[in-house]
Length: 102
Image (cartoon, rainbow, N blue to C red; front, side, top):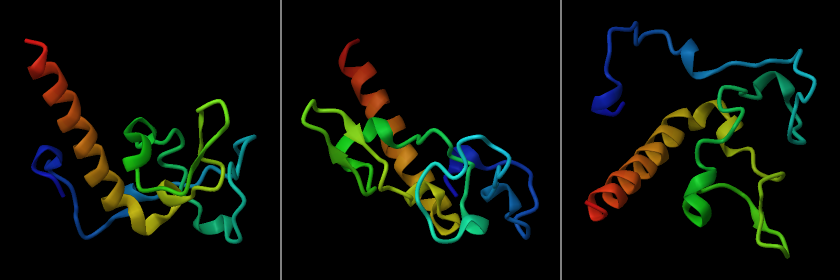
């Protein structure tokens, strides 16, 4: 877990890494075989802004729009830590960008 995320919590339990909202009118938002293991925690993908570096299964449309309909990477319970690692890449890019403008 990244240093910036360290706070007092029971690390024996990792329930905070998974949430399914089966009552959502959009559930599941991607075609999956196992809805019971579909993680809704990252409903809006925090990796979208990474573009081609997000690590997910996406395509760009003819109009240049990133289409993530085939991507379930952030919705897989086992990818929680990987998503956070990618979020750190995004945070560092923002830091670098803001530092280059000052």
